[in-house]
Structure formats: structure tokens, C-alpha cells
Length: 328
Image 1 (cartoon, one colour):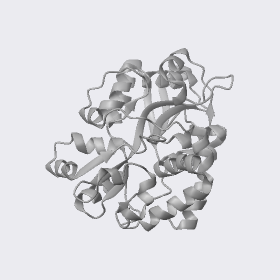
Image 2: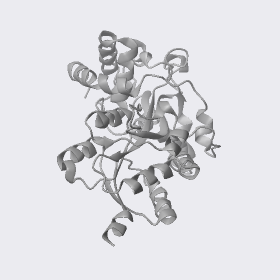
Image 3: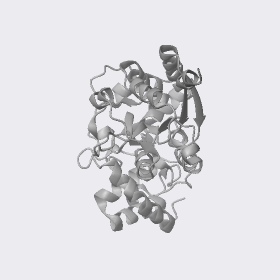
């Protein structure tokens, strides 16, 4: 009886802080009878908790929203490999960890691009259609961002380091600081609003934050969208930086069977469509027909192809650069 009770409960540590995910979890419980106990924290908080709990951790499944953090957790031995035909068929190789003979340590279930938004009244598209131009003196006093140390920015900067090399990357980061309209603060939605209000003229954002505003029926949100435009950077060169949200079975999962079943559920057509329509992310599974007008408007684009492991390895050096150039 105790074993049966355990099998009907899944302990989930999640960095997905999106209210729309509630229905996603509820649908899993309705379909399987497995109740989800959820612990919410950011990526760093979850990894710290897993390390402190060690083998006593109750976690079965880990959901993180940054590819480099998934890689870091893999390197630190916080996951266990999964060999599963359904997951390997549905999740493309580039969106899961390298199989070293025992299966993949983690799987990406949705993607988001890190793009540039700008005020149409102040900035021309051709002045902001690459990441490199964000540091150009022509954009002095126009840029706003969230913290440079936030995972979304660290991953972008890690990919830039791979393309530019360390010397040019540090010079680029120094240029970003010089072009700031104000100190880094807030989240991505705050940056979009600052661009629309004229507090700054250019900002970085993940696509789903912009898509939320584009789909909103609120008058204030519609007014924001009218003031701004978006560009997928570096289409003629390296491609637009793409990050993933992904999941893994925790190293000391007490209920591995239910954990793998949950990952399989996240790869299902229904769950994948929910990522697209509920939180405005692109599904990891190819060929699904979307009904998301905002993602349709953002259109197809050339993604950057730098490996997640490389981005993860570059982040320590990038953080040191941020400290040196004063990027808070």
C-alpha cells in the first residue's frame, strides 16, 4: 500500500514560474491519477537545494528554464540518465543532452529566442539588427536590460563569447554598459515597457514576454505594442540566440517510473501545444500546428547553433567580465 501511495505522487522542483502551467500539471494528474507536489524556485535556488539535500532529496523531476543551468546540473551529477524511445523520437538531438551510452540526462521541451525590441519613433531597424550593434556608440544612452548576471543574459553572453572570443566579448560588454539609459533592473517585461515609454529605446527580451503583450486585450498592453518593433538579431551571420526550458529525472528520484511518465507527457502533442498557446514558447517537437497569432507574427528565423555545453562552460569567464566592466 505504501508503494502504491508513493507511485501516485510526483515531487516536482520547478523553475517555471508561469501561472498558465497550472493547467498543464492538472491535466497530467487527471490523465494519470498521479498527484504533483511542487516546489517553486529559480534555477540557482533549485540547484542549491538539490546539492544541500543530497541523497535525502525527495525530488523526482526537475524543470529548469535555462540551457546552461541544465548543463551545469548535469555536470554536477544532479540528474540521472533516461533512455526512453518516446522521448528520443519526439525531442530532437540538439534539444537534449548528449547520450554517453546510458541515455540523456535532460530534455528540452520548449524554446524561446532572445531578441531585440526597439522604439519605432527613435531607432531604425538597421541600427539594431545584430547583438553587436547594441554596444555601438550610435546607440549611446538608448539601452536597457535586466541584470547582466540573470541566466537569460548569461547564456546569450556565453554564446557571444564563442563567436567573438574573450577579448572582443569583454569589449562588447563594456560597450553595453556605456550605452545604458539606466542601471539594469526589473524583468524582461519591464524592459519592453521602458522602451515603449521612452525611458530607453532598445532592450533585450525573451520572445514569450513580448508575445504575451501582443496577445493581450488590455488597452495599456496594446498601446505598448504599438510603440515598439522587434527584430531577430544576427540573421545574416550567427543566428538568433535560442534558450530552452527543459526537464530531467532527479538523481535520487524515489519514483522514477512516474518521473519518466511525466517527461513523456511533456513531449505529448497536448502538452507541447500548451507550451505554445499557454506560455508563448515554441514547442520542441517539430511539425506541430500552432494557433498562436503572436508566434506566427514573430515568424521563422535562423537560430544560433552554439552547443549548450559550450555556453555553460563560458559562463564563469563571462561573469568575471561582467564584474570587471561594471555590468550589474
